[in-house]
Image (cartoon, rainbow, N blue to C red; front, side, top):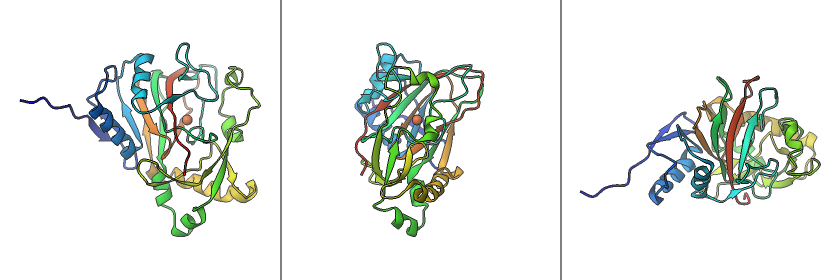
Length: 281
Ligand SMILES: [Fe+2]
């Protein structure tokens, strides 16, 4: 009897997005068929989760490299010996959690990431869950009139967005990675077409978008605020409860995320690898 490649098991966790993948040990090299199945699940569910993966930084990196090119993160220094892996860390005495608001990652870059692969190392006894939201649904749920207003519009995305800046811990400002005054800015379409699925997604976010191109902040804000509320309707979201060894792999082109800051007094450490993306169109 011919042996068959094992099929991975993909279990959706919510109606809008998110699926848990089981039957796979990421400490082993993956065959091409398995990689293709995982990629398909990522495109279909926007964020995929793995449990109980006891993997080393080398194995984390090897897994990431099957899906793209890891890139260094602009604002945070990597692990010793692994510049592509950044620690996402909140210490017991800290009150601010990194990226603690709804956002897609680093949309102030010309080519924002394809996605990220985040691995839980040390967790608080409760809390610190992450919310994800589906930006295809956020776009598709708009009226035809609003879709028409947004079509062809571009938005300015900046690392200086004051809301996002307030979610960066003070210790990161002297990590030596970038001078504190460096401002990164990029202009992207408000509605982007996903390069792999061809579907349209709403590509503004409260973390980094500051205004529409050709308009003032005052003119842009009412529409942006409306869209930010649309993007996070409960029925467009899912919530992931971490355990040590859990992994979340999200598609940054079609989703947003929001780590919940509800575990003051406890340490939380995750390791993150970010994959290079292309220029949104
Ligand atoms: Fe993020």
